[in-house]
Image (tube, rainbow, N blue to C red; front, side):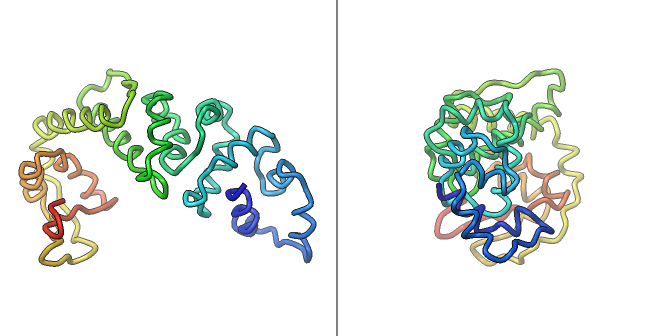
Length: 231
């Protein structure tokens, strides 16, 4: 159970303010895995031991361990995790957010669980969150859509993004971008205005222009990549 071993090794981070006594490790290692979970603040259940054993080692870091601890307290989340052969960062991000879970199907979650791109950080979850925000802006009364595949989700995100950009053009062009956090290079160029972001979206034929408010808020920044490939 590599994830449990990681959590035990980072005891100080999971139990802040509690200094382990001398010899705590040798004493704790004699316990059953379920009891070790309880010692670390997890729910003491065999099901939680099984769920943690599915977590891929590359996925685990201190913050994800804390998130897993909260996640394994949620009986609704455990139902989603039970059928999966393995758990990665993408799965954790989707299942941990009850709002995103309403858009997910077991088939989609299984595809994400097998994706190497979702191993260390979530990729689909931010995309789905972005789609959710655009739909709320365009059609506030429309409910969530259940997705069976990542390909269908990406296509829907693109289609909704195009309409969002068209309908929100005036608001988007009035956004004020902060200075880029990194100056960039000849090959990696910061898009420092809504106009540049819009032009990039048209050139790349994608919905990157829909991120104008996201950039304005200071959450992140978008760069035009020219080499070694266009991105």
